[in-house]
Length: 264
Image (tube, rainbow, N blue to C red; front, side, top):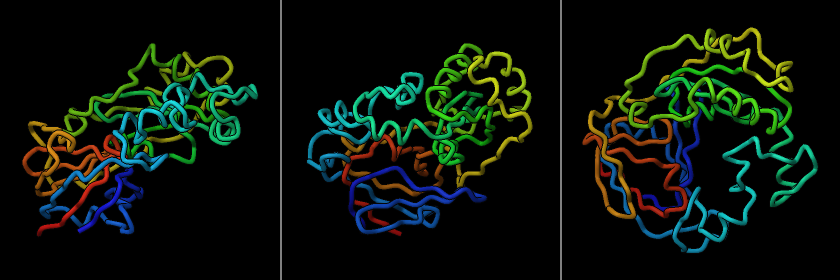
């Protein structure tokens, strides 16, 4: 039996992807739990910042912390709002410089459809794994988050920027030639970022540890259904997939303290 606050699963880029859950003082290798019956139980909340038992608002933070901590500022979700390169503070300039003023990648990923995204270079391929992408490719590598953000905004007029999580989890996907997509989109890259275009690279393919894909999805909300038991059949993105077609998004439930019991 294990108990602790949920944070997103740690991953290793192998074939298949390896998943680990750091919970409390324990470190669970989730791949080893495939085909085992697991019980989940909601215990309480624990904000990832203040660690108080307060309802989670977004991204693992209680409402007051969400509007205060730099990890939840608008530039996180909208990189084009980054201002550290101008030496302008949003919430914490030291933190913002640390995160924003480092190499960033604008990429194409195919999870449910081809989409454009932004991530720090150090988060490749982790970001693709977390999105459940079965293939991905880098388009540009820029020196800061702002340039990545304006490039993403420009490309969003010509390619999607959202993943259909239902399609991704059902594995209703088609292979795409991402190198051709990259070439087709090259013309829309802003002038400030054109010099950072990656000319010659190949797509990365990812294989997830899924024994059985769900047919009809039922999303588990532990706050509404505080106890659940099911046989784990797969892991994709940050989702646990169970035999009865129930799926549980670990990352969307960060900040919840849960009890996990491996029953068989």
